[in-house]
Length: 498
Ligand code: NAD
Image (tube, rainbow, N blue to C red):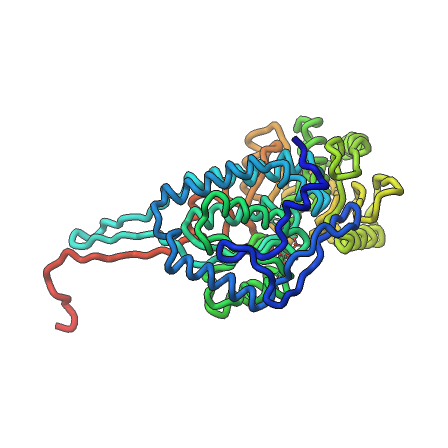
């Protein structure tokens, strides 16, 4: 049954979650959390500063050094992570409505993707916990060399607002399965579902200090968290400019760092592709969640001969998208997460016009809707050098470019500072693989098969990141230390310094 909006607020936790308990800020300070669709204040949450960060990291460090989590039977650890997945499914409606109210994301998406995906990730990584193993090297007859993969310690996880619950799950599921403890800082824009998640973890029996949540700004709690000496590794999802600050913070203390950053996904459409599938794929790729997706297909590359036909079909279908109240399940589109982000997206479209791109579609929004309801917008005749073709807009703005031949399509696709994902549309299998091998992107969807999967790594080329998210082998590599034990069976003493 749909979550009741009026009683949901009584279920929201507003303090930090530290050492298995709710904790107000040491300073007593709080910050408001808004509903962008209405402008109303949803809650006042505690605002962390250095003292709260120290408290949370110390709790996580104690849980790691002395608590059961890294030492317990890995199967039992996996069982707790699995129980959390089940709890998320039980509370699907509350979690979905929470993120819908907090970031303006349509309820059909939070119900249909965000929450089920978070549950799937925990369920999947529950099964990884007891399958983490090292290697044995047998090259020397008088030596047995073993490699162990051991939990690292306290991980600082920092996530953005575009998929509040799912982004948290992408970090937490592998971190926890690998036996680490964690301090999560959700985005200051959207902390409510992360707090709900902490409550669910507590209910299923996570030991105190294993999973802590701090509310706070990036410059405040975020910066203090990543520079805390007891943090072993920083795992971050967000803008590449913030990623650079993470690298700076990681220098002191030589912390490990994993960065999942922005993208500017090209969609290469070849004339032999099934056209109606392309239309739906391109529209979903850029307008789902109003383009606030790291892998949003923001650059459409279409062959000169197919350009007019494809544009006509895309624009006709985009006109049918319904935008409005995010809590109404009949709406495809809600609103952008903050008025400030709306201004940023608007600025990008102004610059695109000034630089000569041709706006061929901009949906009309009802007068009753505020400025966060940015409509789907399509720019044609975009040139590779234009700002709209190079920078991440993170909004519902499609840039259309034409290409002459396959080599031109690949060159234009790769002419970009990001390399998170690419889409290829063709029914020619040889061409698909040939093109994929030449694209500079960590994930490539052919004919629409781009869904997030727990066992498939998310890796960014170029400015899109460092390290890989998910992918079981990659997750183990990211969230465990390697320890090699070189055990001599020889009874001889060392030949040096004889
Ligand atoms: P952002 O970089 O502004 O903020 C992300 C998080 O970092 C927030 O929690 C913020 O409080 C924190 N932060 C900011 N400054 C900090 C600092 N100095 N120290 C520590 N923490 C700090 O990003 P955003 O605007 O919230 O999110 C949008 C970005 O996220 C886009 O670029 C998008 O592409 C990217 N993203 C990437 C992926 C991926 O998997 N590659 C997934 C989702 C979003």
